[in-house]
Image 1 (cartoon, one colour):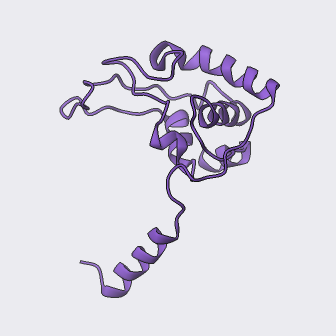
Image 2: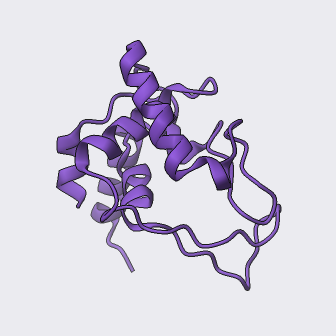
Length: 139
């Protein structure tokens, strides 16, 4: 029920977005990598595993994830902040994962940005930087 102008405007906008995974990767300093790994081990490793490949019937992979590597980190930030609910009636090809908890009350904007940057630059993931300000905008 869109007008031709609306359809064209949407197509122009979508075509203007950079492809997934083509955001400029940022190298992390040793300290950033260490802090990111500590946050990952504390909050994520139990379900997503040290390999980032996720656990069967528990959590999807973060290694190679389109959400993690997207040029626009909004979806990744939202998942970390607000968690994710799984539709148990429509399981994934890997089974019905568990719901992911929210970390909005457990981590600061700085910590979430550090974790997101760790995820976006580990396991051959390629994603641009996430700032605490990016997180604050979505909180």
